[in-house]
Image (tube, rainbow, N blue to C red):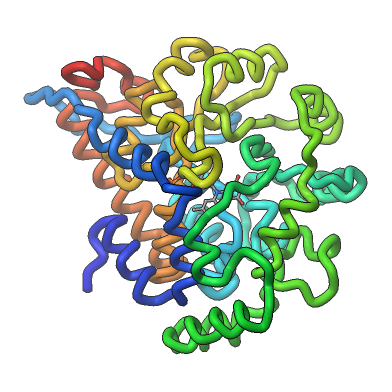
Length: 383
Ligand SMILES: Cc1cc2nc3c(=O)[nH]c(=O)nc-3n(C[C@H](O)[C@H](O)[C@H](O)COP(=O)(O)O)c2cc1C
């Protein structure tokens, strides 16, 4: 079947992955109220159609932290991507590289920093979860710096993981016993393509960057419990000073959802923020990013680079986020589904779809440059 949309990639990912992995990607926390809001609120944003505007000279490129990107889009940090396709982070990073957009490697990636650096020729961004062990954290940041990662995305909305019922049902989270292992094994057995490609040939199944901190023999099913016990619960705004000492380059705070926090981030001089509720995977019931973004853009627009994520499933959604006040957008599930569906080629194709959809949206809202996308591209009550 031709994969013509992110929804098609999602369906293909569901066919290919064992249930515990598909539900891990697809699900959100608690009743998934925010997960649903992210998509519904963004879809509801009306664009203003303007016709008969010459769009022959269209340019979708934009500058992000001193580097040009072909699109105002980055692949955001997604943990465990090496379980969705064989050595998945390497494949996704290469796809981003050929599309000319940044790739962000998660702290909780299966492939570690050095492995991804070996597989790519351009620098990629690194996302940090702060571990309690500060020496380890210093070492990880020094490694990222040494490998030339230009941008540090510091995720601040997951000092403790939200409960995701779907992961408990599939046996991915909760107390790990022989029963949960058997359950996952049975799910994997129904997906022989995945079992051969990733289950057998995609080893080691560890969390590359933090494997040295985890108990010997720990696998992917141990990571949720491990992160609850090993992520730093004492983080405050003062921690930014500590991170700044370790990281001379741009710092982007991911997980900002309120103008008060956005102002604080700007006061501390961070180079960027990501307006995000972690794709509805953390505090359920909070505002969607689409609803939170305009007030944040009013508060700090022009003073820091504003990225936004959560709910972006198309090029139209990218244009909507920019019109609501973002400078660029991060993709999460969109690339995870594409990677699971068809590896590097899938992620490349998904980015082509996003670009094609953006071109149509821009042509019919009367803009030809990313910098021209603003509130005036919105219609009705969204203006
Ligand atoms: C499977 C999965 C794993 C994720 N892992 C991380 C992670 O390791 N670090 C992080 O900062 N955000 C992580 N996120 C959140 C994404 O970076 C992003 O904020 C979210 O997916 C955006 O929502 P969307 O997928 O609905 O677009 C993850 C999201 C998903 C779906």
